[in-house]
Image (cartoon, rainbow, N blue to C red; front, side, top):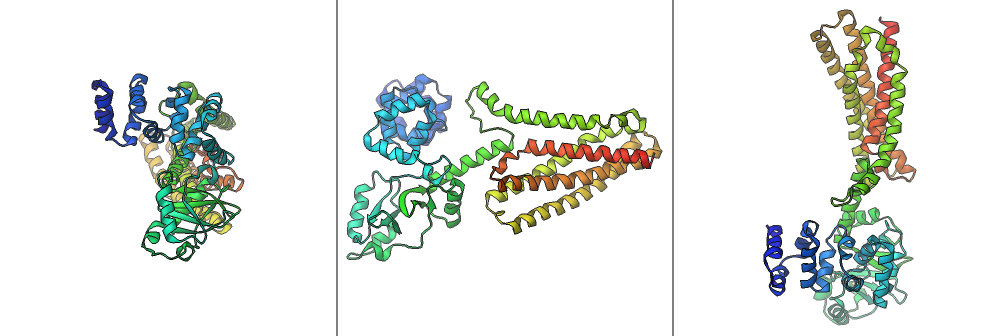
Length: 453
């Protein structure tokens, strides 16, 4: 509805003042959502009708704001970045080509440059890089009345006024104060008396996911970020949510076998660069599958054994799916920090092994019956039906058990080695399980030849 309204306004309204009045009623998010489907001419209409502050709000909701910002001259880009929150400004500059980013940075006010320099000194995936430096703090010993005056004065520039922070002369965080408590407390009363000294905090070099988990676990809206006890910034709930979504999208991309998430409007060449690395690795692994099959080529010279090929997709498919299920559950537990210690790790792997055994047993028995029925319907040589059904069912049982265990074990090993467990993508685990399943299947078939036929 809003999307259609915006498109109609941009198409039919010629007077820019009227267009400004009509679109100002909308939230910046609604306007940002139509950017990817607008042509440059219509986007320039939006650039013309809104001031820098409104444009900064719109750009903060865009997936890749740097693409659209480069439609403007560098002076205008600098003016818009001046109005952004420091963390958003750093992200936006980081997305631009280095030459453009450096040129725009030089056009920023000295104070803004200093704020951004504080954030850029921290690694990308740390709390320091995510934090916002626009927060309200009071010196220890200040009266609540003076504290309220500080809030009123600094509120327009602050990221949030819900929580304020009390620091000593060296900037060390002593406590936090909720706005409600500050309002209801009558003067004279020092902020030290009403501040909360039992606060949660994150270190500047702490992993973003750990910082976000603190916010989620303790249900707080502003998390102070410290460096050697000194307050450096805060992470707000909305920024934490954005970071959590971004991490989830990255993990999903890795799980699908991509080096990073693909954007909807990115070029084919960029998408290929993201897809090819893992596909190349999988190609090499699939060659191993081919080599293993070639080692059992003598099986296909025996008339009664060629029927085994029919059941190969079933075994590979079920084993692959079971392995992927186990992988997904394990990665979720790792991301929730449920597998940080040895005891829960062994318990989880044992559980997945048990699930594999039970699932494999059920599927194996079912496949035994179905294989016999299918072979009878195909009018296969009856003396081999029972033996072939045993091979299929036992191979499926063992393959599912192994797949479940590998699906649980692989991400845990990667995690303990300091590698992102999401790297153990679905296609990767499926291919590894194919290697195990093919080996198990045809090895059992070989044993069948020497013992039953």
